[in-house]
Image 1 (cartoon, one colour):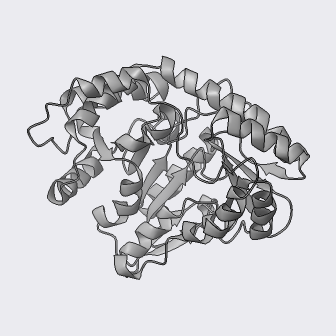
Image 2 (tube, helix red, strand yellow):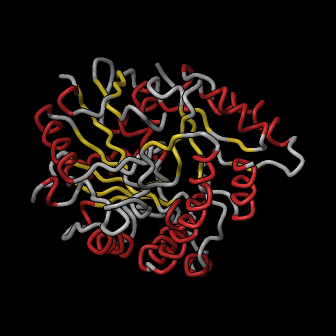
Length: 367
């Protein structure tokens, strides 16, 4: 197995439905991809402008100032205190890390990578890339012997489910029992909607209540794409087990995986400013408050979705049929088929559309 053996990119199958949606007299409302549409905050853009004299190669490990900013952010926003610079590593967005982590950890044929049942497909792609076996499972008691890497995604993409402290404790304990690395994909952690996550932070896998005083075998992965509208910057990072971070750093040095110096400077600005994150969250909250009841009024049931950037919905029929019904309303969604074999009757609707388009979608659904 290798890159040449990967299947066609799944989103190509949505193209006919996009064409149907574009034919709507009022145009398409594209809720299929979670790509931010709102402006990058001025505080970040200004920081980028001041760092454009980037004549030297950046360090793979990141600048000391960036790693300090990441450590301070974990303490302030995630309840994870005392991370040292040796426990932190910036990455070129989070998708490349998700895809490459099995390779960087030295996994191969015979090894197992566990990922959620409703899952971002790149977890399985990373396993296939090295010839490992991808296994979908949310219950740690069912994770098999031979597991070398576990992906936990909370809040989840696509289903928006949050794993609380007891669940994460069980996840980490089982991974350690198996001798596996456990990685928490936490990229939507700032977007909690329903109780209790409307009032308290979504817990990190590095929370001391979860992993204890020792981060052995544990990694947290975070991206600034969603909270700060930095998808185009490719700005993300990981933190956790110092020995694991050192291994990953060495491998990434060999591969030339370096976050550009101006982006590192912009990341510092984003991590140090909470105001723009609150503003963006309120923008998504307004869109969700408009879209969710309209989707339900159209006959869909919303499952999970207590946090994150999506509504995970079903009307009890095959997702392609629902996709067609929505496309005839000029609305494009993502089919559950893309997120595992267990959810072929679900569709994913993103909150990343301009306010006017979300209003249009809600009006069409209610009609």
